[in-house]
Amino acid sequence: GLNIDGTKSNYFGNTKTKGIAMAGVTNKSIKNLTLKWWDLYTENIFNAMLLQADLNKPLSSGGAIVAGAQLIHINKIGSGGNEDAGKRYMQQSSAMTFGGMLGWENKAWKTSVNFNRITKKGRYLMPREWGRDPFYTFLQRERNEGLADVHAYVLKLGYSIPGTAFKTGTAYGYFDLPAINNYPANKYGMTSYHQINLDIRYDFKGGLLSGLGTQLLYVYKSNAGTELVPEKNIINKVNMQQWNLVLNYNF
Image (cartoon, rainbow, N blue to C red):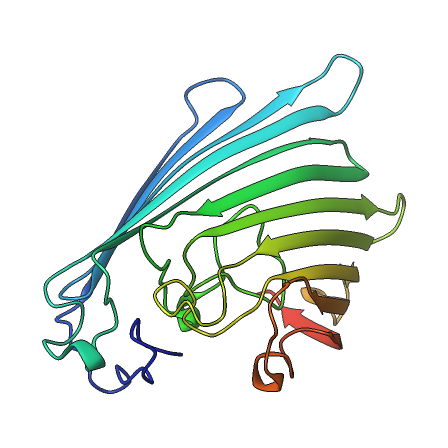
């Protein structure tokens, strides 16, 4: 990616920390409501705090209403990784993102409308090697990490085929991103995009393959920006499709 001034990021191998500490609390004392607090402290780099509330309200007619709200705040700790600004991981003082979800589900169906906003305050930064984005709008094969001033809208639909171990899912997302040359808000030069995910899963139960999960995933992404975008910001990023066969073994 790029620094906030448009120069190439140079924090790799130059970021220093004495360690990482993480703590979390989950509270289910309120009926149908789950409250979560997590804090991730990375000495000399950043601190990230997550607050989340999830509601699962059963309906007398069957199924349940599901809803959620989330807030994440990140602030720079110490030098942000290095005293030299060009070698610094966390270059801005803070970042904030918030989102929500509303849906309905039962034993067979799962539906939801999802929204997430990364504010103009600063880039949402989180090492990608540490896992997926925790947003309600997360879709496989894309991240909104490294961005600021983002509006994300996602529709999700899942169906578990009765009497089988097959699950199907489809999702559509529109991600409104800042301009690719807005370096303080767009670390990787990603343009606004539409994304469609289709997948089918099968989890083996019993026998030698017990614990093996399989997934066939199709992803299509198209450019949704109105600006003229160079090929280097198009190729393998948008106007593309991808097939994935995923095998996961759960111990």
